[in-house]
Length: 412
Picture 1: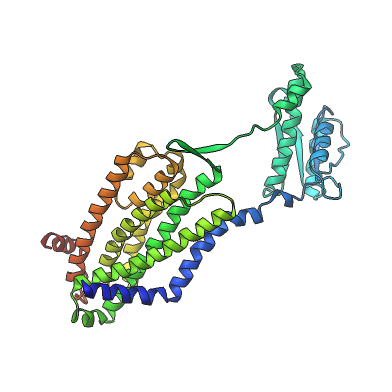
Picture 2: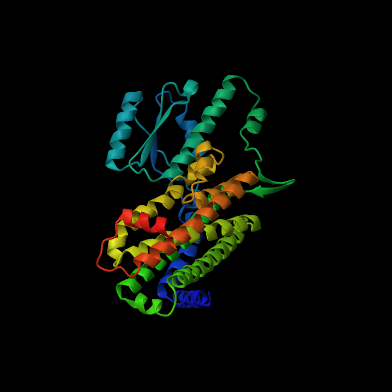
């Protein structure tokens, strides 16, 4: 076992100093921080430029009210309205619409609103623009029209203006997470983003380390360096040392990622990484790493060049990508039967359980059961990987078939 630790220490030391490690380790924290802060920098309602628009309103009843409300709510620091209106000359609805279309095509206005005939009864409004990216402007227009329609609807039923003002106020909504007998305030965006951040951390750490492991074995096999190594240590110690060394590299990356995510959360005044959540994360991350490391070590020992292994690696990579693709569904439906069953499927277990444990209270038996199943399959994969590694590592110039691999595993 001393030989395995020597290999592990060498792998850890050489990888931790590599440019690839530094780049990949910096990339994920930047991605985490970017996901949290970049949207706030790039998408800010204070940057709304407003729109030059026209309001098609044949009744003449609503355009003035909507325009007045827009002027009251949305102005520049100099008091200039953000939504100046072009006065339409026609009195008919058809004529006003044709005029608005012509103004839009000529670039005189940037959008126009159409107050439909059944506006008061159904609240029907059409918004036409040539720039679909002005989402904040569209939302501000929608809110103004909504306010005018709500006020008109209440007034038609003779509702007291003071009551109407009260009903127009936003309620004081605060979200809490139940943790035993205690409650802790949560942010909806935080609750949604935290499990996704956990999964992305695990995905990057596991697959960077596992692919490095595979490339290392392929390179040493192709250059015949592995023959010299096996003259000094056993194949078991060599594979174990490589997996342990790169596992420590992965854990180092994970620790850095968790620290950055925690500091980024503190910067926003939220607790993105909790002690309990980090504990479960590390448990499943370690088991998940060794599970996938065994698979990638097996793949590396079967091929002489990285190009030959890429097709298999591409198929393997599809499995852990599934939790990323369906993460939104798992967050919204953590107790769905299909999610609970999939949690016991070892390749998906670490990713799905990390999400579920962060968004809901998972029964203890499911936590213990999934961890036990993953641990058993990890041990099994490590054993099979050792057999495949020992048998295939010195086979050159021969294409290894699946039946042969199955036979090795059975014999081993």
